[in-house]
Image (cartoon, chains in turn brown, blue):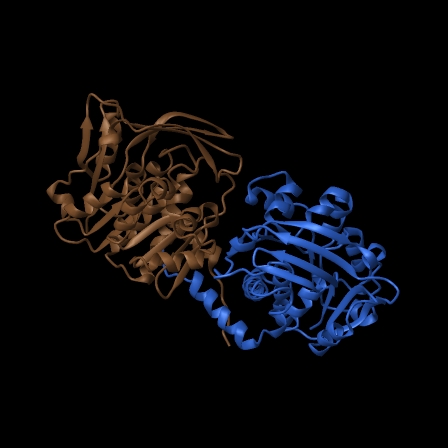
Length: 307
Length: 307
């Protein structure tokens, strides 16, 4: 089993109603790999950072089995930086600053081993950059999962639709699903998106859980009800990392196993939001994961006599 | 098994982005009884209508096993009337007109049989009116379920808190739970509400499902993902009717059986929203109910190896 993860490694600065993070480590590939590293080794990480990115962070990922020879280090440039502020409901946020820096010219180059992975996940990036990664794979991976965001629907819709045709699973949130299809009903939106050639679609609804669709089935997983959501940044990527990590570990891409993968992703996301950035998920143990998996079973399990 | 239902019987006039209903039958007791009548007989309905309320509607309920001798008919007055308009997301609405009419002076009087029911559900009414019904019960019912709304938190908070202390299960939506406790986190809000003396709390989240809490457990049931939500009016009451109907049928008020009751309520609500008012739920068959129960099992059921 092997997994290639493509995405950003970045500095985040986060304000919530509960506090300020200062400048911390973030980025889609960072969160995906921290989550997935609990399930699968090796992970081939493809990203770009500036000379300002702490070597200690790279070493910490490396120690978790993440191979970083596909991470370009541009010593004379600065890492991608994002600053955001969450509103009281923690579901909506404003971007206060976005400095692309090294990301502006990012052209991923996959080392040989990364080209041979059985599983590939494309974190949120320009769709043409995501497509360039698929083109570098030696053989078509068993499963390609793609994340995206509303920004690309506005500035690169044609590229986005082309890239969607190349992947198996698309991850979007509810408002993105609506924007991409023009359908308010998520069930109708899902039908339109699946008709674009996807095998599976995951619609993330934040604190309201996630839906998994294929042509014939739908599965729903709630988010774990938590006393406090401290910082939602990276929760979607952490969910994606748990999802792909479980699939890569089990090498089973049936709908049944994807349901389990969604629950695993939800467990990882429930830890992510407990502290700023990666602080909580980098400390998660297998025992922690088992505890919350059991909580999910309790949360949704019911018996019924179907007459 | 027997059930007493207290609440409104009314005229509704509804505008949605998809159409206008004209003047149709609504009211909390109407929806609760239509839903519950699929599971339990007799239902003792306690309500008030004016001389303008169609006898055919009373006959239709009667034919479903709903006993109406506790429904006061004030021939010279008009029935309660509400007019509302839903926004595009169908989750929020504006009240365009509210004419209390007979409801302004409603003082429920329970016939003897209604005083002896094992199960009692109090649809949304002034909390002091709800309390007056509890006071009329000959012996304390096995379970008392109470619905309410934000309006009473604003104009009759003290009475509301007193009435909550008399019941076993409180039904509120997420914004009402937040308003009543001053807690944004629903988990924290649930703890505060349970501390008021409730045995169980149900927080309804509309299209995002419902949460059931007791002191030690939490259960989540999603709403069935639907292609179209045509009219959400009465969905919460229909949910409540399915919930109490299943409990009264099985006479089992364990947490395990309440989970099943929540799913039954969700099934009934999923039918309610398909047409204006009671049009769909009055036609629901046992086969319809079984079909959607099976869909709920598929929707949330997953297998996982807990290590």
